[in-house]
Image (cartoon, rainbow, N blue to C red):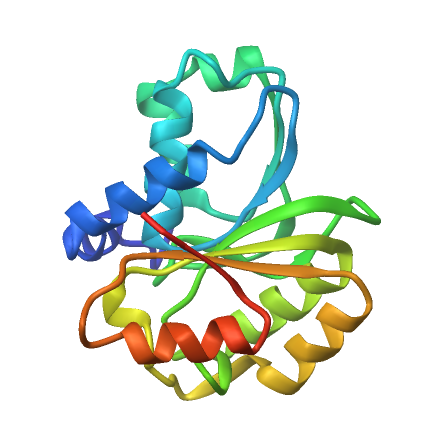
Length: 207
């Protein structure tokens, strides 16, 4: 696929690997046999996918994704994921940088849960350094009841260039019954920001 670099993505995936793996293990513990979910773009999400594939307790899942790195991982190492579960890839345009499908077209009206990564999360909301991520998140949030955000500690308190979901919109989502869960790691540098996110309505789970 022209313009796609698996090596570049894999290099970024290795940054903060220990934290990302701890987060992934915690997220997988929240998933039950038979669940329906969406796996979004991002390196931490690929670790969620890997630990999900390694688990002997998770099967009969219905998984939709726009994360091509997840699909590549499962095809190369965990083909059982396609045998024991339904796996669907959404339509759209392929973006090489994040190995994901953007301008996504979702084949479902509603889905219970989405697990997404983010380059930045703060008291201002969710942000990204890529304009395509805005459309991904907006499209997903409209159709998802529970949004699980996976973010290593370096993303906490960081504001990217583009707002993918402002805190104003998140508050509105919460009022209409949606939920936001942040799975991350806590340290002395991000503790205050995590408290503010809790106060704003996020459920914060420490891995």
